[in-house]
Structures are given as C-alpha cells and as structure tokens.
Image (tube, rainbow, N blue to C red; front, side):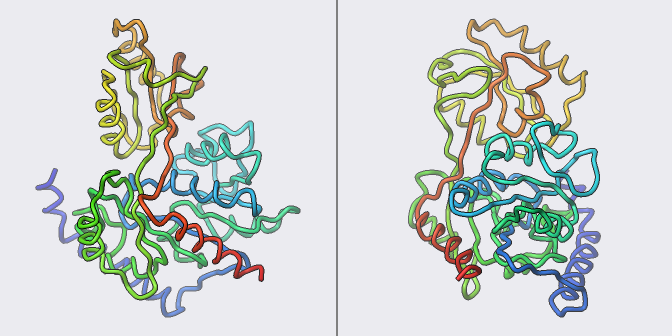
Length: 344
C-alpha cells in the first residue's frame, strides 16, 4: 500500500496545485463566498476521517443548547437522498446519514438537525424557517469555501498530526497544510489522558500556530455503562467474550479501551460509514452465535448503532464524549464570546 501511495506522488502534486489555486481564488474574492448575520461555527479537519468531529460537535451542542437555538448542518455522508433534508423522528439512516441521525436521537428535542451537501443552501433553508436558529454548527465543512463561517475549528489526531502528513493520494490530506491558517482554533484530539507538559510543548512547536490561533488538547472519555435494549454496566463483561462490530475510520482506541478493561472480544471491522447489507448481518450473527460466553453481546460504536439497531438483537453501544485535558473554560469562553458578539 505504501509503495502504491509513493508511486501516486505525481498525482498528489497535481492535487496540491488544484486545491491551492482553488483556495487562492476564494481568498482573493474571485470565487464568491457567502456569509450570514448569525454565528456559523465550522468543525472540520485537513485529513480524511477519524479525527473525532462528531464528539466535538456534541460537546459544543451541550455547551450551547440551553442558551441558544442551535442547528447542526451536515452533508449526510452516504445517504441516498439529495438536497436539503430536516432530520425527524421518522428519518432513516439512508435518508440523512449516520452522524446526523445520532445528533437527532440524542438532542433532537432541543436542537434542529439538518443535512445538505450545499452548505450555503442549507443555512438559507434554516434561516427561512419560522423559528430561526441563532447559531449553526457546520459538520465537516472546513474545505467548503463557498460558505464563509464566522469561526473555524480544525481537529487533528494525536497520533496522526496533519503536520506529518501529505496530500492525497500519497497521504491523507484534503488540502495543503497551509490551509490550517484559516482556523481560529486547532484541537489535537484523542490524546492520552496522561499527556505530559513536555509532550504538549513539543506538539505546540510542531503545529506552530499563527497569530491569533488557540491550541487545545482533548481526549475521548468512555462511559462505564453500555446503552442498548437496557443499560448494562461495563464491569459485568470483565473476563467475558463479546463480539465487537465497527464501521468507523479508526477503531483502534475503542478496542484498546476494551482490552484495558479486561473484556475479551472478537472483532469484525467494516469501512467507515458502512451500510450493512443482509449478507453482512448474516455474517455478524453467525460469528456471534459461535461465541460461548454466557454474557455475550454485540457491542458497537454509537455511530454504528444507528445503522444496526433495526437489524440486530442484543446490540449495545459504548457512549463517548470529547473532553479537554485542560483549558475547557477557555474554549467555552471563546465560543460563548464569539456568539455574544453577534447579539450585543
């Protein structure tokens, strides 16, 4: 695989040229950008997949939902519908995508959740509603230059920093590292909880912030209780064998957590945002039935759960949250002060 990526290096140079020219045309105003009179916060990354956008957006939802009318707008990756769609109680994952459906199931009574690949059109639709949002959170929209967000948050994974990566198809970057200059905040995600001050200092040096940018470090906080047909304490599975099913970009931290907890497992891995076919379900059930543990369950991630819950019984997911190693109050203040600026 590495050899193939190396051989594709000339295409990466072409990709760099195309994306750089595109960004310059937006920077110089030749390509039009659309801004709005309300705060629009974009959460995204420079690399493809697996940086933790969903838990970070959920963090911001929890921060704001009791003070503002919050709306989230996602592309709705791998959905089978087109155009603008509002997520409702009758929405299917094939209609709106897994992450928006996850947002709705957790916060749908408190916020509005919508999808539209055309972010400008999506925000216009939201603002045409009788009850308009006072803040919009854009999911995975850092490269959507047509819309001018008022605040940009870029995520980069601790063990796969964008500064050590290269452009597609040789690496995983969607655009040049220079693009990070557009960010107001950079968050190094999925850090070890015991990340030392020296490591933070070295990471800060590697990332080399430009004037005005803020850097934060976050980690994934796993819950102790599984959710599913009923609540199930994680400690009841210690020493038991279960089946783990994942369809995410980077299941390694999830599996490492289970291993550290002393939970035995067999693992079936699928591609990110995978739509599970009948054949996939039969394979999952077949492996599950061969496990002899008396407390066996099928465990998946929250994002996968919304795609599997109607297809499989005895299914559970492990809730997670994004949490800051330090500086959470500073981050919260940045967001709140930014929004307050629009309503002073």
